[in-house]
Every structure is written in structure tokens, then in C-alpha cells.
Length: 150
View 1 (cartoon, helix red, strand yellow):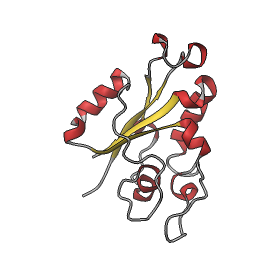
View 2 (view 1 turned 45 degrees about the vertical axis):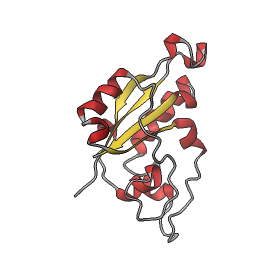
View 3 (view 1 turned 180 degrees about the horizontal axis):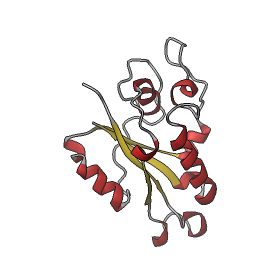
């Protein structure tokens, strides 16, 4: 049985100006993951999110769950996929965390790095490009990817 990723990039447009707690700084849906990433690479799922991690990667954002402050659009998409009863591996990661990540870190065999399985040159590149751009505008800590698997 295959594993598919769903999710969305969100940002907090007003957070850089007014702070993350301001009412105009709530998370807003930006781009649906399926518009940017049509790949189904298990080694990328493993190194990024710890899903199907038979490769031995140290995941960047494993098992954080669904963010309680997610935008209404992301909540609706998550519910449309069946919510917690029908999905697994739900997590999220900010652009700030991705920008600080050690992309040279390898799996336990030393044969694959994060960069080679999920870096800019892979099908994840468009996702990182959008997050990078939004991070430049709104601040890297105010951009995140919320993702779940089914």
C-alpha cells in the first residue's frame, strides 16, 4: 500500500509587523502542497517527517501533530482527508527550521543525504522555493508546512 502526502503551506502575514499574538497575525493558508509537489518519495518522507523511515534518517519534524492554531483552510483540508482517524504522521515545520537544517546529514548507510532526497534539486524544490519567498516577506518563523499522510 502506498503512502501519499497532503498538506499546505501557511504564513502569518502580520506577525513581522505586529507580533505573532496580534489578531491580524493568525495563520493563513498560502499554497496547497499538491500544487507544488507531486512526488511520492519515501526516503524524502523519512528524512523530513519520519514517515516510512526504514532508511534510518534523523527526521527534521516527526510526530508534532496537527497545529492547534492552524488556519481554517488547513483545518478543512485535514478534515476532508478524514482527520486523525484516517491519516497518520501529521506534523509541521517552519521555514526557519528548514533553513537551519543540516542538509548534508545522511541516512544510516551514509548513501543518501537530506539534500539528495529532499533538497532544492528534488521534487520538494518548488515547496522550498515558495516557503523561502514567503519567509523573506513575512519572516522565516512565520511560514510553515503542515503535512499529513494517508
